[in-house]
Image (cartoon, rainbow, N blue to C red; front, side, top):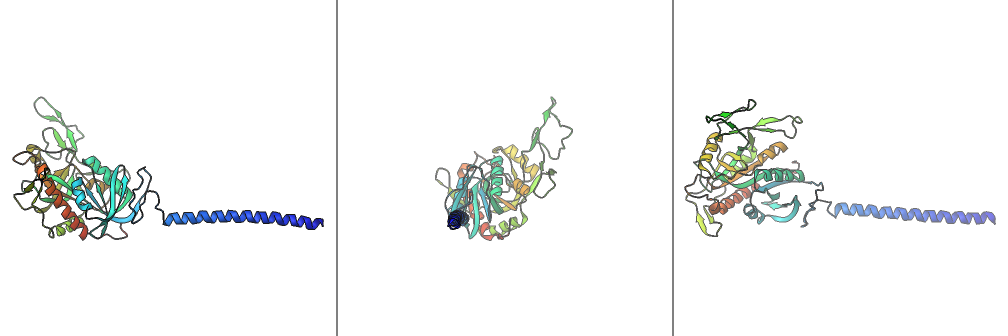
Length: 351
C-alpha cells in the first residue's frame, strides 16, 4: 500500500512537471510565431514596406532601404513638385526633418527629396540619402546663374564636372596694393581682388584611410552625362511660363541644352565683374549654391547635375531675373530629369 501511495505521488509530480513544461513550450512557440509574423508583416523600425504610406521614425535610429533606386534631388520645392506629381505609389520617410519620397517615376524605382538651399545643406542631405537608401544613381536638378556669355536664360547645363570656387585664401593686403601670400600656399589661378582660389583636400570610399588627395574639379559620371545628352534630343524645352506674380512671360530665345563646367559656392552672385572673373578663371557655364559631386566622389556614387539658367548672375541689363524666369527654368529642369530617369538602367545588384 505504501509503495502504491508513493507511486501515485510521483505520478502527480511528473504530470505537474509535464504540464509546466508544455506551458513553457507553448509560450515559446507563441513568441516565435509573433517574431516571424512581425518580420514579414510589420515593417521593421525605420523601413517602409512596399505600399505603406506611413513615415519612418525621425529619431536617429539606424535603418537602410536595400532596394536599388535612382535618387532625384532638387534645390527648390517648385522643381521637385513637378516630379512628385508624376510619381506613383508614393511613401514618405523623414530624416533629420527632410522628407524623402519613395515611389515609381517613368517606371523606375526612385527616391525624391529636396537638398535645401546652400552648399552645406545640399552636402548634408545628399549624405543622408546615401546613408539610408541604396542609391544606384543620383540626378540633381536646380536653377542657376549663367556666367557663359554665349548662354541665355532658360538654357540647361549638363554638368560634366564641378568646382567649389569659393574655397579661397583671403590674402593680406599691403599698403602698396600688393598681397602677401603665405609660403605654404600655392597660387594656381588669378585672384579676384585679394581672394585666391584653392583646391579641396578629400578622401573617398575605397581609398587609403586618411590619405587626402588634392582636387580642384569633382567629376560627373560620364555615362550619366551621355544619357542626359541623349535625353536632351528627345525634349523641347519651354520658352514661356508664369513669373512669381502669375503673369505670362516668354524668353527671347529658344532654350537649348549644353554640357559644361559648373561652379558651386555659398554665395548668391549678382555682380557683373565677379561673374566675369569666375567665367575667365574657371571656364564655367553656370554657378549655383548647391553641390553634390563632392559627396558623390567621397561615396564613389555615379551622379549627374543639371542646372537650368534662371538668371545671368549680374550679367543682365536690369535687375536680377530669377523672379521672372524661375518657373520656366524649373519646368525645363523637371522635363529633362523625367526623360533621363526613363533612359537610365538600374541593376537589381547595384549598390
